[in-house]
Length: 147
Image (tube, rainbow, N blue to C red):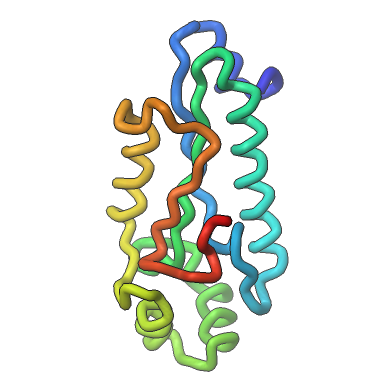
């Protein structure tokens, strides 16, 4: 954490703090035709664990929220990525959200406010004794169960 500007500021303030990474279910579960994305998200999650180790001594907590397929309001789903995902899963753009919903155990869509609630939990004192953890917000994706 010594090279991270936010961590340096938190250390200098001496008050601890909370860092929340928004990664992806794909950091834990492989996805077809998305090797670069999955690798980047896995790296992000591992970085968070490393930073959790480095920051704990001064009360800096670092945790990860792993969403899956937040289509509403997300710019990642505009253009090529949307087309690629629809093609990979053999559906059209309009059927993609239903496909993601139906593959989840709870058969529910994941929305931006769901991710915000998980991030709030990690950022707040509700999780004051949590660091190096992951919350999956994916309506139940067994491939992404943490082990």
